[in-house]
Image (cartoon, rainbow, N blue to C red; front, side, top):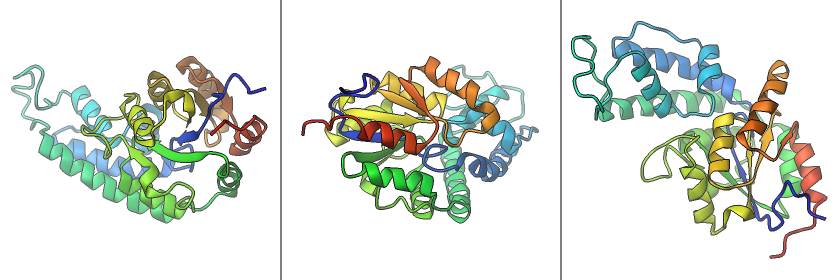
Length: 266
């Protein structure tokens, strides 16, 4: 019998990328922290964030969303402003769409180059996916920019398993850039693949990512493969609270479980 935690007509695995397919979260925040602090300084905000602080508070969000959230948190007016004049007298420049786009481009460049240098293939990810590939399609569904995904997939030897046409970015693929937990990127991916949500299974490591997939109506598995050991119990609870059907501790566990299920009818 098919495990009720998985769709009976499963056709495609929708895979989050950062922190899920490769341990990119920590090195990404090392590179991103420098850009984030330069961005805030350019707006007159005299506050610096460490990579660890950003990792704990913004995992699952892309830089565009993080930048706007931090600007608002530090009293910077964001245009188009919902409350015109709210920042009057602060002496700080407003965050315009053009300025934000420039910093998003800078962060993409810096982080992508860094990840391309520090990531490497992981047999514990690549081999289970190769076992699953004859039965299921793969697609990447991420908040990160496509240029960042390209560097990561090249460095981790996942290019052939998840080629560029099956990579969907909340930053680059949608008419309006957004970020998880907005479900737009998951809905878009399913539409582009010509599938309904119940033919898909999302694999997510972060709470915003799980919330995004669940809100799109897609059955979702939590993955704590790359979560720090001391944080695993808490993350497991948080993912279950976000609506995942189960939580796995390795890609091998997922492959073994799925391959034990009857194949979906084509």
